[in-house]
Length: 249
Image 1 (cartoon, helix red, strand yellow):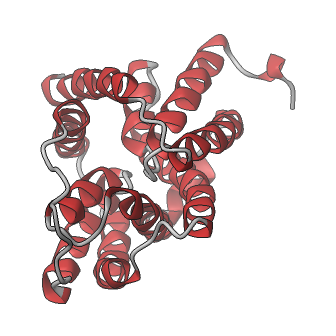
Image 2 (cartoon, one colour; image 1 turned 180 degrees about the horizontal axis):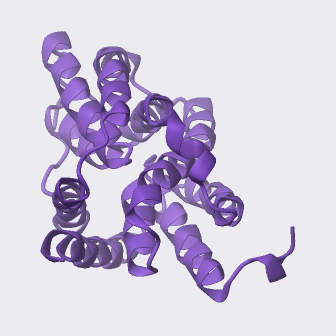
């Protein structure tokens, strides 16, 4: 398979996905919300956006999990309850095939919230870490997991700020915790949505290479404590525009 096999639209989409993977993986996120926004702008059919987003998330979060955990950026006491809650919920969400109109509105609101969080960073780290509330963590994992499975996103954009705000983890530990959470959610969601895998277009291979290269760069930046805040705000604007497109059209 050569580059001649892909269209110019595929190549441009892959370039933007590559940039999105760099930005998101730098903080341990899979980046599905950005890939979904990009594919939406580039005219990808709605019915295959969800499985493509989950597939790319698995690639990014697998590498990110390994690299962040290797550097001990992980909080097991947070990870355990949120993953226990999220895996079955994400699988159920993956099984549910929402009507196109409802799917677009739900995905639009998820992208809108993700974009606002990237721009304004509503939640900040507390001065002292707090004891993890297992029941609350389980509940949060379940809710985020269900939304992740329904929309094809990984949920890290919501989990990270929440566990930081609750004082359960440091900012850097949240990166590794979120990356494993996203990996589990994406695997469970794709398992529930397994019937769609056979309909994935050949461009998935190009997009996979793009996210693979992007996550290698992004996780390196995250581990070295570089903070591309300006780029995240730009990405936040992109997500909001895509959200409005999903909601209003």
